Amino acid sequence: MIGGVEATPVDISPVDKFREFLLTKGMRLTPEREAIVNAVYAEHDHFDAEQWVTDLSGRRGAERASRSTIYRTLNLLVEAGLLRRVARTNDREVYEHDYGRQRHDHLICKKCGDMIEFPNEMISGVLEKVAEQHGFRMAGHRLEVDGVCAACSRPPARAHRKLDMI
Amino acid sequence: MIGGVEATPVDISPVDKFREFLLTKGMRLTPEREAIVNAVYAEHDHFDAEQWVTDLSGRRGAERASRSTIYRTLNLLVEAGLLRRVARTNDREVYEHDYGRQRHDHLICKKCGDMIEFPNEMISGVLEKVAEQHGFRMAGHRLEVDGVCAACSRPPARAHRKLDMI
DNA sequence: CTACGTGCAAAGCTTTTGCATGGAA
DNA sequence: TTCCATGCAAAAGCTTTGCACGTAG
Image (cartoon, rainbow over all chains, first blue to last red; front, side):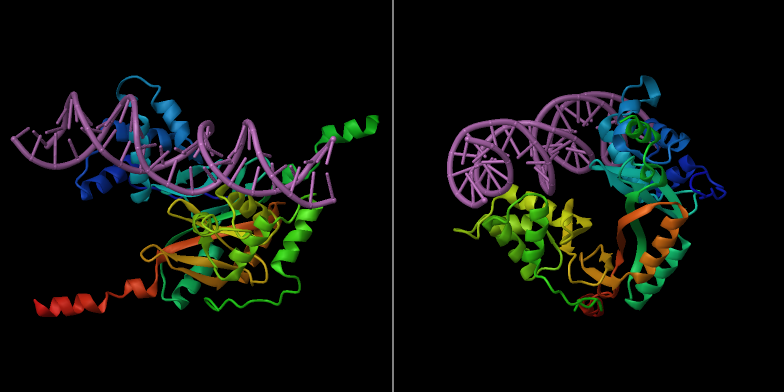
């Protein structure tokens, strides 16, 4: 559990949810697609495409998937509501799970790159009101808060020691 | 005014503010840089780099600026607090004035691309509280709300007529 | 046998950068 | 003379795409 954002119970597995989605589009759940969903949903919270290209395209056998397939599948997973593009770091799109997780946004430290999650009911509430006022049918939002995290704000102990020695 | 977001009084012109900023960095306000600030602050609210490359690199004389200079200057203007990168459309970074304007965020229509501005005191308030709770020193934020605007939600009149004729 | 998928390599795009030239202080 | 800037062309880097080949149904 990260940054106080708790998981919410999930009744259908990501793979099954993806299969459902694919069916509605006349598409198939191939071994490659399944491998990608499993990999992506196994552990990571925030990741970029390259991480999985390195991992999955290096494998042998049924668990393998090429760069193209990975990119194509990530797009499908976003469409399916399983993944969400939450930020852009080093020119790379950053993804995270958007299924079985409480809605949240991120504080992004520009020194260490850490992404701190926080629940966003308040924000969503405000946005719903704003959208309504404008007759805007809101589909979602993407909020990146940038700044410096607590750890990086504190001058490191090493610097102090160094200073003392002068 | 756009989306109910009013301008706030400005005492120093954008060009002068930019000159000040450049001075603190030991840099100069060249004719190219001045042309870019003037162009950018003359009218547009939302724009991308390419728009000004097309315009400014096509000119002759002192008002001209090359692609490189435009990109470099836009970065400086962001650093100087004169511009803000607010969204990404068609893989291009979208800029807007960040000087002499009330703080706001955007509802972005994914059908027509329209960007509807709304004041963001509420949002900022919430974020300040969240940041404080995490000991996070907030520098700014970027909020993109996507969905469909009122106009695009309404089925166009033409469609109705067409239907009636069948 | 038809449609959907994969993998590879190449293309596409925006944005950045190396380098030679030019000008301000 | 010493930096700082510009412009051009090329590079960089992520993501998408054309195409030939496979394969599920």
